[in-house]
Length: 572
Image 1 (cartoon, one colour):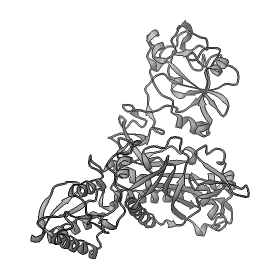
Image 2 (tube, helix red, strand yellow):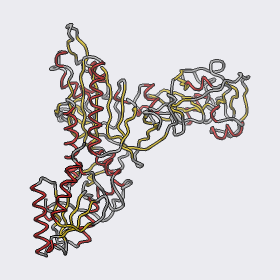
Image 3 (cartoon, one colour):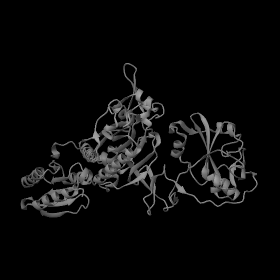
Image 4 (cartoon, one colour):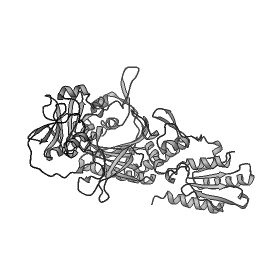
């Protein structure tokens, strides 16, 4: 492609709302353009990157026996009601009506669509297993779109679904998709970790996430260097040590104005760990109070998983309601003497700590030496706590370390949630009707673009891995009015085309500085600069990564680049 005929409107200034390198450079480099809040278009360079990522994903999926289909992004209310998610998915779902008042949504995911697609035609165990996938846009009404295409309202995603006769088959399908994802993300050049994930609104037995490491990532993972353990902060567990003390007599103490764990523990000379922190919540209109150790934070993902309610159905209690159900101002909530009907959840760790400090449900007062079972009770929840760096991994394998990252892929073992909901059954070898055992597998195509840029950039712009670069090589003619430069530049360009190298020729009537800045910004891996030595068949060879210019013959530069690209794309 000749740049003089290409559409590449690069910008010199960062977008005002850009918070990350990927947002800045993808916008300035003419890969994306913002249409509205959280809505982006892909310009030619961006579309080429998308196409290359899609090609990598398609090959990986087909290598592991997944077949491509395409379902409509317009999904009928009926199939979502059958799965029970029309009302529970939450405000992120875009809903609309047609002229006949029939209700639809713009698909935020496709479990219902795929289950409905096969339910009347996949009816025998002899047709199993089956794995089908698609690459289509998804829509979610993000409350706070940010980071450019990393968290947008309209995004491109590959989603696949497996259908098996039993859970043993599901394990095989799950491992295949795991391996397919490893192949795909390795080819993209991403540095990532595979971690245990929370099943969330998807439901199911087990899930893993593929997290591209990035300091600007919204997700936090916890892992150990001494083992394979890794999990998201929504899922990670940790090991706590407990020292049993002799139970002391319950004592009501005055704590005037002390409403926080820090204030109470300092005032009473108590370790915050030996205080019970109350988190006052309203869940589906009913009060729920969670108690956790004072030195820990309530993990909302674990709470949601336990309560089996969507996140949007949970909110903090207002001060007036707290005072009504506890009889005290906020900051003095405890598990003793609450209004009848208030649901009390107690993290299991508090049942193993003696002589706790708890709120007394009386303004300016706390209890000392409270013990579970003797002085208070509640629903014991195995784990409601957020793990953090420095904790011991739950399996004792080592100290947890924390890192930030971008979720680029996920795999779920769904089980029968959707097949039963949509009445998708098959006949087994005994003629017995059974629901499909399903798995769900997603890759964020557009999000992968963002993740790659976060890992591959410098202060000048993007440094694309060859496998996903919009072009593999660029030939820059310094002075297009110089016949010798133009002739040599076009000869090199023609040779690359003959060798099927994806090449861009910068033949614009622009200053050299503009061409060099654009070249650095858009990040094409291999470069040839044709300048004043063209009459001697000499050019400058460089790579975007090293940026070192080497003066060599044009033939040597061509061979060097062809060899390097073939090596880069061998994926050996």
